[in-house]
Image (cartoon, rainbow, N blue to C red; front, side, top):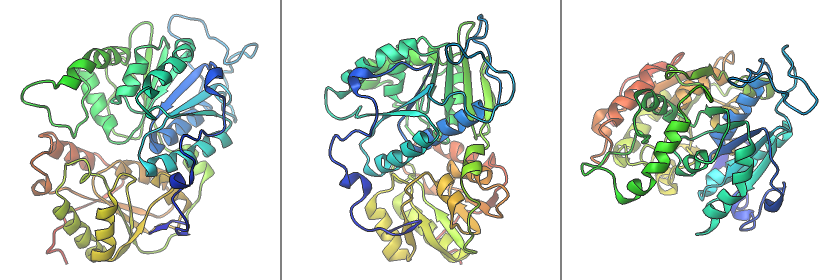
Length: 411
């Protein structure tokens, strides 16, 4: 397997790290308060926090509801004009709620370095490092959460984030993209529904034991994410969504990514982008592999950019059985593609990248195409909503070429 920079050498980044090692930063006992707290659990969420902070530097910040404008720092008045530096630098504390998955952790570690390069503080929390880790993490974050005026989150479906939202008194809540799940979140919020991930089937018997226990937390988080006279809600997204009642939707055009990376060198060929639809139980593994093989033949693809959650056995079959070079990106694909080298054509199944790559690669000459998911590929365990949701992801994508279903007979 290779990285975009060349063949992998040595152990993966996470394997080389000492267990329990924390990135440089403030100790737990001295967790500082910050006007803006951001909670992230994935590399894409952290990328979009950086995009949001970059955009926030270039627009006047609104006054808190019902209050006069407050200074961003003590003694420094709010500036109405456009500025070239982020007013959040030093005032933004990014808290990484570290997951278990090694590939995700590796990408997150690299993203934290980019965040620090922008002047933001980052704290790495081993939030899932043992049976007592969640309680310890929540205790450490309770004070800063109550003091923060603004809270940024990347995954409103996360039980961890929902628990933290029950603590906060922030007057401003911002939801940044964690992929296409943002589309489902906005729809559920607008309809006043319980927050449930789109690929999870709803049991016929109602809520399970775990869901029943967590139902009050989820309900409280949904109330916190509903705007009112005391609290604003902003959704910062590259997805095509309509703002729920009272909320604000701000378009993410990947201005920071375009300003700091690339333009890329183009290879002239075609690259395929993988998804975790098999790993989430939505698409049948055999049908998925047949489709990848058909797309590779039809478009002359030679590389396959793996999703960070794809299983190694599946990737091994793609490499040995189909003959594609597997690339395991060390950063979110939007950054990797912008850095290059990248194919002149990028082909993906319905996923976040069919919405984000055209924006990140605007003006580079790269064409993005999306292959629809045949309903016959869905597993019996897939949510009844899965087919319509994936079709919506494809149908609402702009500046992409839509491809027909790929099958083993495709030539």
